[in-house]
Structures are given as structure tokens and as C-alpha cells.
Picture 1 (cartoon, rainbow, N blue to C red):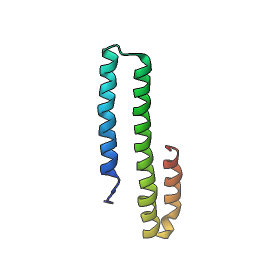
Picture 2: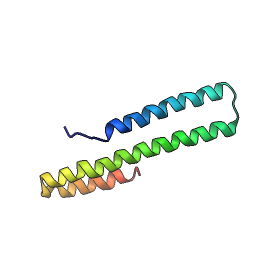
Picture 3: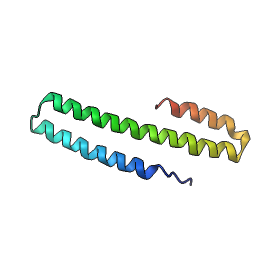
Picture 4: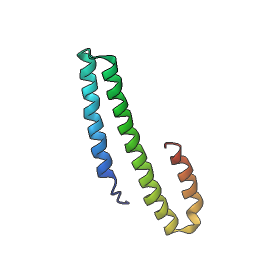
Amino acid sequence: MNTHTSHPDIIKRLKRAEGHLKGIIAMLEAERSCLEIAQQLQAVESALGNAKKALVHDHIEHCLEHAIGDNPRDSGRAIREFKEITKYL
């Protein structure tokens, strides 16, 4: 299995977003203003987007380079995988 050095950072980001999301639920239950809630939802959305980008970029840099480097004949498969994962950016 390949080692992904970015995964611990991504896990930290997601755990922070998870805590933040729980806070938003508490805000809703406490009937805080819609503006405050919307601002916090935007922050969580941004955090998730950044985590996703980090994961995709790691995959591109680590997994695809490794796949092409191991067997250049498999580059077609790696390119198809690259095209598939970029739709998540």
C-alpha cells in the first residue's frame, strides 16, 4: 500500500469541520440568526472543499506518478484515472 503523507493533515481538517458542523447544529437548536448560521456553513463548506482538493492533489502527485513510473505501459490507465478524479475539483 502506498503511503500518503497528506492523509493525517486531511484527517485533522475533517475532524475540525466535523466539530464545526456540530456547532452549527447547536446554533440551529439555539435559534441563532440565519446570517450567523449561513456564515458558519460557508466556513464548513470551504473546509471540506480544501480537504477534497488536498486529497485529489495528493493522488495526482503521488499515486499517478507512481503508477506511470512503475510501468510506462500502464500510463493509459493512469491518465483515465486522472481524468476521472479531476471532476471532483
